[in-house]
Amino acid sequence: MSVFHNLKVKNIKKETSSSVVISFNVSQDLISFFNYLPGQYVSLKLLIDNKEVLRDYSICSSKNEVLSIAIKEIPEGYASSFLNNSINIGDVIMVSTPRGKFILDNNLAEDTIGIAAGSGITPIMSMLKTTLFEGSNKFFLIYSNKSPEETMFLSNLIKLKEDYPDRLFLNLVYTKIEIEKHYFGRINSSNISNLIGFENLHNNKIYICGPEKMLFEVKAGLEMNNVLNENICYELFKSSEENKFVTTDKGGVEIIYTVDDYTTKIKSTKEKTVLDSALDNDIDAPYSCSGGVCGSCIGRLKNGDIKMLKNTVLTDSEVSDGLILACQAIPVSDTLEVDFDDV
Ligand code: FES
Image 1 (cartoon, rainbow, N blue to C red):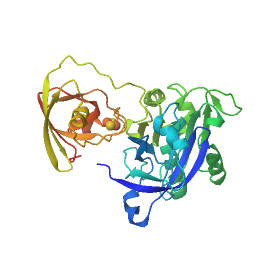
Image 2 (cartoon, helix red, strand yellow):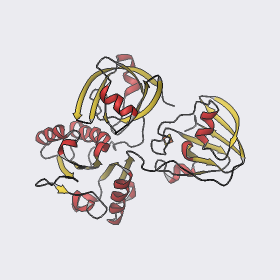
Image 3 (tube, helix red, strand yellow):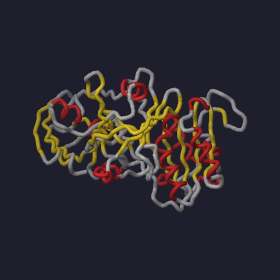
Image 4 (cartoon, protein in one colour):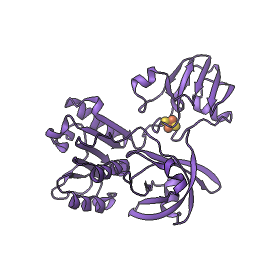
């Protein structure tokens, strides 16, 4: 379960015309709650037009910097527009303790490869800076954007390259503007091994963060080059799929939920996900993206059968161990028991 604390906005920095970095003051008594690992994210509970809105944002600061997140403004994005345009230094925001399984391996002796597109750079930035500031290994970054103007952290990266010329390797890729010495075009399955450099491809951990299409293209390209699956870590920045499903089974289901040591039994329908049934019955199940991306809604299936519409978060062994994504789980059996505490 996420625990939220009120944090004061310490600083706001416009990164590009459509993105912003927000830093928070973490008081002494909260420091132990906000120890984060490079790659993790926090959830923000925002009150916009008297409506509570919950959103996840990756941490972009290195392990020992002031806790900072980066937010790219999405056209007509409710929360991202609010954070880009309506937040001031000194405002108080409810921020969850850090979470997430997309984490930099703490073996800072191996070289590391980061592949990012657009705002997918945010968790990779935390990994890159932690590597440079605390390790002695090299970091190879392949980073795709439409143009330099839309590249988040560009000046920061150029400065880091000057400070760590032998340890940071930047390969900036542009998709809309041709610029000398930079690759022009999209990162895909056929060019990824060239962009990384064959000599770096094997034995090193590769972290990918970006939109779904790029991510699966890159993953396919790495697999074609026999990169071990265990060396590929990825996080979908945003799901491009709608969370739609069709079920022919419109029967009823009885579900027992355990959340925060409290057990509740409800009756619902197999047309709803396990998460929707919980929320419709005022059960305080954890969730965030509702799209099978963030992993906030992980629960353990103690009894019964479900099918998952989509899963890019749990490993095969976690699934066989009984873990489910409640927002993606459709009841199959007539009774289910889901425990959100036992995860
Ligand atoms: S709520 Fe994000 S994966 Fe289910």
